[in-house]
Amino acid sequence: MKVGTNGVRINCEMEGDGPWITMSHSLACSLHMWDEQAALLARHFKVLRFDTRGHGASDAPDGPYSLEMLADDLKGLLDALDIKRTHFVGLSMGGMIGQVFALRYPGVLRTLVLADTTSRYPAEAAGVWAERIKVAESRGMEPLVAPTLERWFTEPFRAANPDKVRRIAQMIRTTPVAGYAGCSHAIPKIDVSARLRELDAPALVIVGERDTGTPVAMAREIHESYPGSELVIIPSAAHLANVEQPEAFNAALADFLAKHR
Image (cartoon, rainbow, N blue to C red; front, side, top):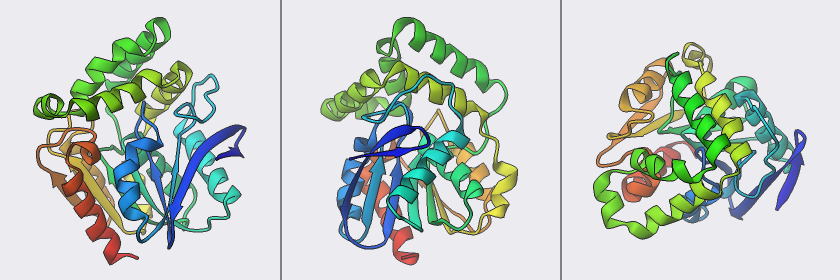
């Protein structure tokens, strides 16, 4: 279904029954990145997944976007669905949205799971993101598919799981250029490490040990900046740890949520 919020229509899906849990995907993916996790969580939760502005079946207006804008999109979606409180799971860009949302709207998120994400980029990262925007706007998404897959998955996984890799490749390929560029303007501006101490919702930080995009050091910074948070490092996983090592990811997620239901 599509819900109007903050000047756009956001595509979302709901399944299961129980306390609400909201899932936010990475850049250049869609809510279907979470298919396996959503099926498991729906046994105990009412799962809300949504396509971020500029992705999937949501509207993709011209940017640039900001993380505050994306957090406001989520707040409008929750308000439209009359969701007062929810658990939250976000990976990469989704984890950035979760951090900004939690700071912007205290008390709404019961827990936060922040996977393969960061709370701060160094200044030199801006050039990397500017180059990706330039490629997308001048040549489309296709030239970004292969290098993105190389960052997101280890080589052994790519070789052994061609069907899973093709599925994610198609998400990247079909992401609207305006959405990719709009969000790529927002991502490198995140800088909330110093404010994470303001948050008191229980938090789990997950990271693939071979994630080069948001490496273990960035996960440790979130963990060390967020009082009481837990940290899980998943072996043999790169950036999309939920896809590459779903059993380990799901176990960490289930253990954490069981403590905070």
